[in-house]
Picture (tube, rainbow, N blue to C red):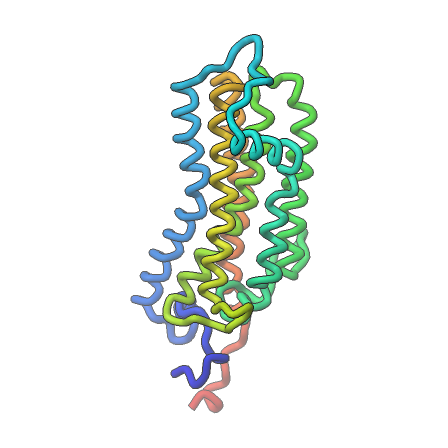
Length: 270
């Protein structure tokens, strides 16, 4: 039994204690699948956004580059075009201040450290390096693919890279809410752990919504249907695949750490 709040860890990971609890394990897998689904929602919604944009496509062979769509779409377009590569790093910085990986590790939401050899073991640095690599790969491909923009939407490709980065954050935040559903957690900035997770989740989804709106107007007015879908499929495979791989590493990190800890001797356990 839990004596104090310091001893409490995420109940979703009781499966990896000894002896294992089968029913808890089944519930855990169900919740983890939900968290993966929530994290994949941006790409699912983007699919339907592109379906609607393709149906209403008004792309012209002469180009619509001087078309003014209103204050909000224009502002979002400028922000994404000029600052798109750095936008998700604002979320990463905000999380570091509001709900750090160290706190999540202590609560048992994630493992003590990430285990990917090519990345720093520190969670915050590991995510930063991963996001930087994704942004760098996207930038290299962006400048090389611009000449063929009639067949490949470089702008949508950028948006999918940013969405993939935000997906990794959505997964961690949904994991936090799932693990903390019976606890409020530590008070910080006059907010509990759950409240801070909800705030970060809201900010992240606002950015996702802005990117989806930008995707619709870009696909409808500025790029051909063929270019939209080639960029979408390529982005899902490259960036979406990387995001899913990272989320799986986050999911298994707590299990690996738990299994790597030696069991107490029988004499001490009695």
